[in-house]
Amino acid sequence: MYFGDDTPVGLDDAGAAPLTPDQLETAAGVSLPDDPMLLWQIVDTAMAVLGDAPLASASVRQVADMAEISERVRRRHDGLSAGLYAECNDRSVDRATGYLTMISYLAYGHRLGLGQARARTALANRLAHRTALTGETLDPVMPAAAAAVADGLISARHVEVISAVLAKIPECLGPQVIADAEERLVQAAKDLNPKDLARVGAHLLAYLNPDGDYTDPEDRQRQRDLTVYGQDDDLMSEIDGHLTPSARAKLDLILTTWAAPGVNNPADPDSPHPAGDEPDADALAAARERDTRAPGQRRHDAFEAALDFVIAHGGLGKPGTISTDLVITVSDADLARHAGIAQSATGTLIPVSDLIELASRNQARPYLAVFRDHTSQPLYLGRGRRSASKAQRLMLFARDRGCTGPACDMPFAGTEAHHSPRWETTGGRTDIDALGAACGGHNRAEGPLPGQWSTGTLHTGRDAGRMVWRPTGARRPWKLNPLHHPQRLAEQIADRVHGPPHPPGTLATHDAVRRNDSRSIIEKELEPRLGLTRLWADPETPADHAA
Image (cartoon, rainbow, N blue to C red; front, top):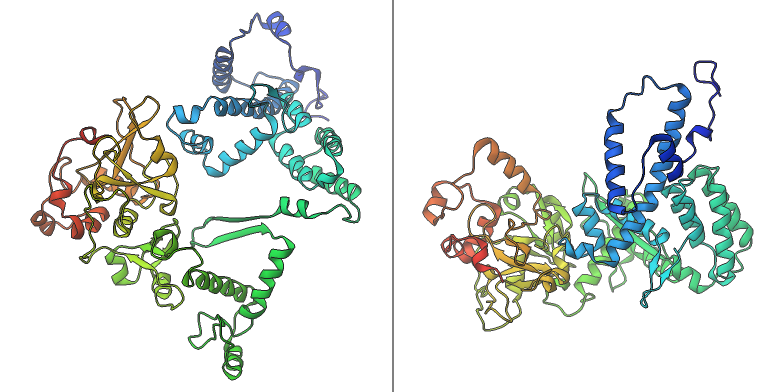
């Protein structure tokens, strides 16, 4: 291969071969330490210096060698990251830094996002050495792949492909067959890109199980999955998965009736909804003539009708609790103008136009947590009871929308009512201004010991009434979770440009609010039930109210 001159340049050139520590010391006079912290700092510094190093004076051969070394370093780093992940997990670094799981530690602490955090976790689970309960160090789940990654010969994407192939090998063939398949695939990965490696994996599976004779119930159960992806820009959600034969048979049975032409058509008010009674034949025939939906749209509408049926008929458990009701919060202004976005207790965003149609159905009657009208349900229970009432849970949803713990993305449906001050030891009250939504992990993480968290409540500003957190004993600023209130970022930008509606730390009375209707969403939601005077009665910092 030639690159613009007479110097032949090829991959696997001797100049790109890795150097041993002794060779590095001989060539550059660099002696590497044994301390892993110093080694990481050397790598960090070397990469920073390398970013400013001019390449114009390098020969074509040297540039090609550097490109090859760069790819090897990138692949080695995947293995090193997996080892660091395992060490962080074993030593509970996530908890020490204020996160409940390694996923949240990577996703929010290192700002990777949930998708990349899960991918890093899966890679570490395959490549890193493990520690048994007895303290014994165990080999990686994929030892051949781990060794190849450590040598910089294959990438994380290669490992994903190999893992997907191994997952399809029937377990009844035995662990030795799976280990041999991994070694063969790793060897092939050293010469192939991931796409071509997947083709080799498909041929290997066909060779191991040509007629499907080895498939058994355990293998099918192992492969079952269902994933609902996040909402896109149009608030639509993609679904992907693998159904077991029994689940497929049940779904087909439902779709045969409920996805038939003319049935469960949301655009047709006279469309039959066969949720118990046999639809009238003439009405069904007429609805069938009016139905212009595509087959995929009919299947979607049948699926939604089945969800309505489960909710309306108590399929989620004992009625009357937040977890069994469809609860949605929306501002009164958006509801009045039939525009804007509402949010469910599970974190789903719903256009108000769709919400109005949803509320009109007989099958599912959602609670609309608008909170502009007065209610006779008590919100202040003092020490009379420990558990929050349903009215309080509804208010917590409208205010917090999810876990208030630092960087926790748990939607409200997965939270509990957290007392601040604590109920057990510091006389906590079951009042709405002393409660905050917290997932089970953060609820149990609050306490007076080192490594635990303290909580408090903001009393002034746009976020008055919301719960804040910080490590127990620390004097660092209180942390307010922004994940469930993305609109706050826009408000903060507006404040920088135009200034806040009133100076921070001041009390806002009812008369002042009437003169200047610049109230935040929280203020609007809480005013009818609590009154701003009581909510903001104490202008001190949350430290005075920490558990």
